[in-house]
Image 1 (cartoon, chains in turn red, orange):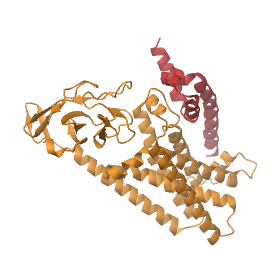
Image 2: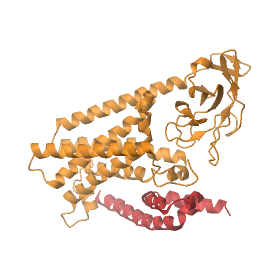
Image 3: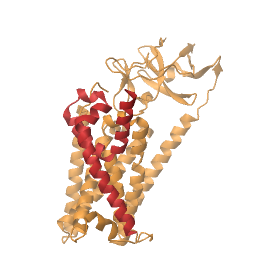
Image 4: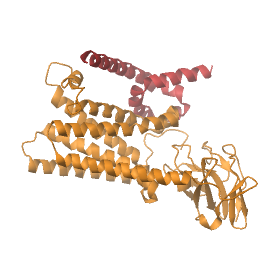
Length: 72
Length: 343
């Protein structure tokens, strides 16, 4: 059980670290790539999106990649 | 609705509701802390904070869960829906304070990592009564975090309404974790008949209201056409629809709302593009159908949001024979203009 807990917490830690790095990218660039309306919005809106970007980074990454592919 | 995103969509109502939330939270904390100090003066400050914010989060979670069915059963509760989002975020913040102080007080005093200690301080995962209840609270907090973090309109649009709604329906899983967290905690630490009774009553009230609202909704869904004439379904008489309001009907398994306004009748989809709000429970304000949930607006004759907004919903053809209203069950493409029926 302890090994399982270690694995789970290790996964959670890595997931969160990548999430934080992704959130920085999302704040400066990713949010614009996903939704053009962000350009018209204040920077505080993007600040508010940071926790969501940390929590849902795989989904957002997938959506951004998908969007860039379809716009090619 | 808008051409850009706002950090918070403030209006006078929202400010008023938020003020009430702040006053309510303050009074609750003050009362809880006052009673605890009077009845149990040896309680430490950390324990007081953990208990005060934990019970506050549970109380707010119950209110959040009650607002949905209450506003379906009685339209007087609809304004509460406008502010449910802020209430939900407040509830998460209270739960976060409870969780953070619990981890600090119970798991940071040793040499092991606090989160590792949280998961391993009690390893009776195969026990029903001694199951590590703090772990359940941790998972509930993760769900509540994801919900609070995605409560902005940006997420609703960009995650898609289906994913967003699915994520936010996880509140029921979080609620189940919270119930088990409290029941097991109460059983394992200080058996308290009081907290178990309050929580049981809360669960019964939430479950009953959800059931009642679901039964009411299913009655609407089971409506069948009374009379059909050349493919047109009779729905009601003109007098049955109040001025500047609508009646909701089911045609081809879709909910439609027939609005009466300015001596005219128009039929549109009942589902708002924003969060799927029930447009038929809204009003016609300044010539626009206004969603009761968040104020999104549509022109009744073409289902389009007034320029420069771009949201569109399906429209339905109507005809009137004497005083009877008939609807063609086949919806037209979103935003299709239909000449309203003159009364």
